[in-house]
Amino acid sequence: MQERGTFGRLGFVLAAAGSAIGLGNIWKFPYITYANEGGTFVLIYLVAIVAFGAPIMFAEILIGRNTTQSPVSAFSALSSSLQKSKAWVLTGWLGIAAGFVILSYYSVVAGWTIYYFGKCMTWSFNGFGPEQAANLGKDFGAFLGNGPLQILFHALFMGATMGVVILGVKGGIERSTKILMPVLFSILVLLCGTSIFTPGFGDAIGFLFHIGPLSADAILEAVGHAFFTLSLGMGAMITYGSYVSKKDSILKASFQVCLLDTVIAIMACVIMFSIIFSVPEAERATTFSKSATILFTTLPRMFYELPGGAILSPIFYLLVGFAALSSTISLMEVVVAYFIDEKGWARKKATLLVGGGIFLFGIPSALSLGASEFFSNAKILGDKSTGIFETMDYLASNWLLPVGGLLTALFVGWALPNAFTQAELEEGHGPFPYHAAWKFLLRFICPIGILCVIWNVA
Ligand code: PHE
Image (cartoon, rainbow, N blue to C red; front, side, top):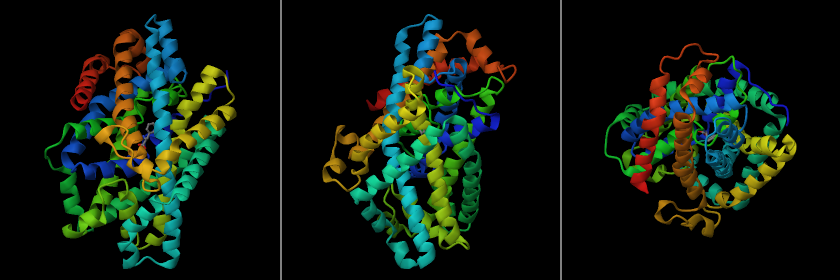
């Protein structure tokens, strides 16, 4: 077997936060919140983070650290040493499938951040006036419809991810997140501070925190997003957990990751909705479609009104790209670690083959936002989603991740003995008096909750 690395204490929190914080927070959460009318959707999402997210994150990191294995090997090692059914290994497989699917379309969106970095550079040099502001939506649509550009930026992003994953845990992943995350956070704080002075700020806050009706589909989406945003239900946290030292507290690290992730998602919403609600209601619908585009059609307006915005805007998209990179790294690492741990492949070979395969699999998604009529209109799942991109996201976030999370909760809740889980959580932490309550959540609340949600939409 290849030598495995370990994370330093801060390195782990930042790498795990790096995995969690990404396009899910800054691109996806604002647009699905906008599409689902805010308030109640946000509330369900917050409940899902506390009731399902945090307990399952403890569970995943525990599995990884205890076995020092990636998901498939971890589930098979634990189930054979504790004489449990071999079938649990399916959970690991499901995770690898989810990683593969998510990375294939995630990398397409991540590529957009590089393109927008370039676009902002042009605006910063050539000027950004009312005409550019009015054309933001149209320009973005044209970019989405340009097939070769979509594939090019998808390829660039997959290449960057492979470059870091080849360097391995310590050299690549830990080092890059340690620098980038704090800078991204500072820019978000600055933008949030600025948004207070926009005319739409009050309405944005009202929209985020009002209570209204919500469909069963929207509830599934909120729960699915809680898994997506915390990188849960697919073994990413098991894989990262396998690099955590026994001296570190799983509980503390998980809590910090959940908190940071949630704060950043809410901040991204405040910033974007303040801009959206600053536009008169009559124009809003035509200016901002309730779709995957809002990150790219809202923010340039704010930036170029800010002093220093010409410098901040390219930096911002670059950093969102880096946040996406620390997530794509973790997605790829799950699949790559499988081939290293189970098949004994060298890291380089595993990365090149896995990366190449995911790139090819992502091409239909890249072409399904306008470039190809066929891929853009494909309705593989009937009315649930239109186009390959949306279908992949729907499948992964609303099904693969919640089901993966459900199986993990059942495994750690029922199959792992109490003495075992308690000892593992207390290692590096000290006494954990809430162990029984946590087990109760994993045994009953998470499975029943996730099943109810799935039942309602199936
Ligand atoms: N959590 C990441 C984000 O919010 C996406 C991701 C999902 C990463 C699953 C790894 C595993 O952008």
